[in-house]
Length: 67
Image (cartoon, rainbow, N blue to C red; front, side, top):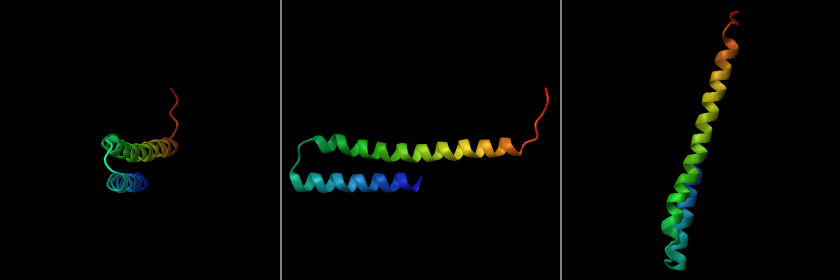
C-alpha cells in the first residue's frame, strides 16, 4: 500500500514540474486528479489482496464441518 502513496506523490510532483516548466496548457488540470486516482488504485489493490489472503488463511485454519 505504501507503493500507491509513492506513486501518487511521484506523479503529482512530475505534473507540477511539467506545468511549471512547459507553460500551462490545461492538461495538468486533468492529469493531477488522474495521478491521484492511479495511486489510490494501487492502494486499493493492496488492500484487496490483504483482505483476500487473510480470509483464505482464516478458512484454512478452521476445521471442516460436514453438512
